[in-house]
Image 1 (tube, rainbow over the protein chains, first blue to last red):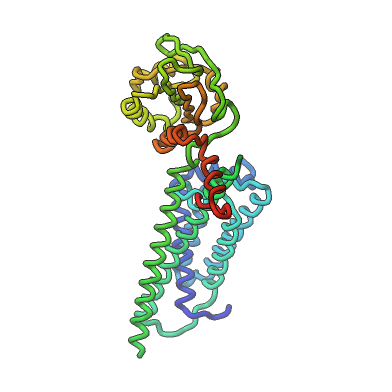
Image 2: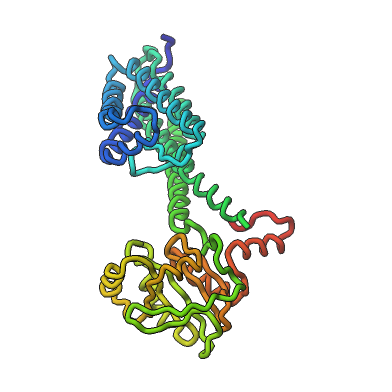
Length: 184
Length: 209
């Protein structure tokens, strides 16, 4: 495992833990919705969809919990990166099927966004973050400033992530409006 | 030197976070605006008699059994707004107060007719519950088919000569008022208005989005 500065590694781990936690909570709170969502993806056989709908957020929670633990952090990042890769794959398949009208289901019913190419790119970017988190933290003494930077980096990263998400959720509305304006 | 860099670094972080929050707030506002206006304007959709066409003359009956004629020149030279709604359409509900205030404010020239379709018992219950006795209320499949109403709430404005001035999906007060605006300006739809603006513009660049 290559070594990276501990602040970078820890920011990546805490940031992804926060992301997975919010995703899992969103899915569990709207479980019925997420079940329907999963069915729309049409990738799993129907009988196992209800079980998978519970299992997916639970796995997310487990990875989030493991990510903040120093001993299991690196492995959690590998698992998280893999999970995000699976999501990107599932979204990609449905985009190729031309099913851009279904909801991502990323964070449950609270934040709806229809499938689009940006989601795949977003997940690839998140996998890169997970890769940083999977690196071994270099040993150097950490001061108060390091912890401040860690907190601020996770905070600003989360806010920017939410902003990008909102913007990609807005995009189809704008397209719909353009299409409407252009019709005779 | 080191403490200067530390201070500068912390200040920059704060600025980054404040900017991030601002961007997020802006993005959310854009999202909310899309929700409020979607679909934009009082949209004209599909076929049926369009702006400028004679409204077909239809002799119908209101829910309380009175005969009513839609279309054709109005003897009292009044304009008619046909508002299509349904008991199962929540946005229609939000427009009922708007219709009441329009009825009061524009009583000098405008008649408002409510139109719906479906089971009579359900319609009567809805009519009763929402206290719509002030409005002529028509339950007719034929009317909806004639104007090709696909989505609700939908409104059609017919002028005193019996000609359709404007029609479209009306999700809020502004959309309804846009129909009156259309009558005044002689523009049939938001699409046509945009097209006119484009034609008037220097190079047809989009200035309304």
